[in-house]
Image 1: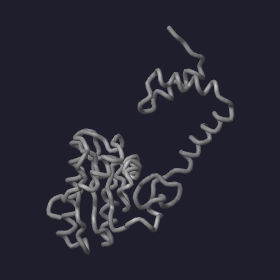
Image 2 (image 1 turned 90 degrees about the vertical axis):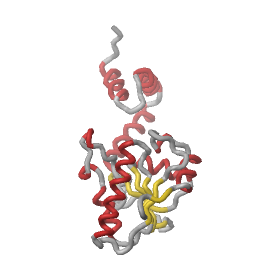
Image 3 (image 1 turned 180 degrees about the horizontal axis):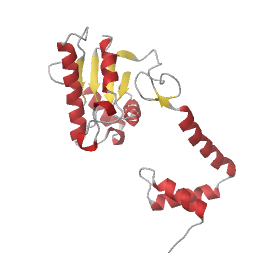
Image 4 (image 1 turned 30 degrees about the vertical axis):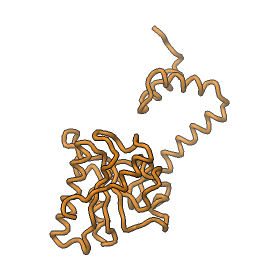
Length: 210
């Protein structure tokens, strides 16, 4: 049985736990790190340490941020009347690559999935509704992934907004749209190219009676 030195095996085990990294890729990365200068390895180690020590959720949109607000929320040039709701912070980066969207975001931190035990308390639905209560938002773009769970999450958000309107908690009801054009059913936003996402944003459709 092939055995590695203990520190090397520890690194291989850690690398294999990363998404998309199998045994061969883990081995390739580990051997590369053994060949490069100590300074390069220390730079990588320092970057990983700073990542965990410095990055936190944006207090407004829950995107990853170094300060209280992420660079997008802090940018005065962004349209604060439009909020695009996504599942993960990686989806924000995917939509930003499209160059089509200039509003703000709201990162749910997941999608509703009763089978997996993900309910309202596990994602930032309440924080989204609180943002809408100030009446500044005129349009909510639902950009959850076109999966069963993603669609269920979008429909639940639409229902919750409708309830706020019915109870008079919203001074103005925002237009509710859903991106659709160009995105394959069952796909994830993070794997879509910029052109596909740009077309999806331009071809968004109304949800419910909004």
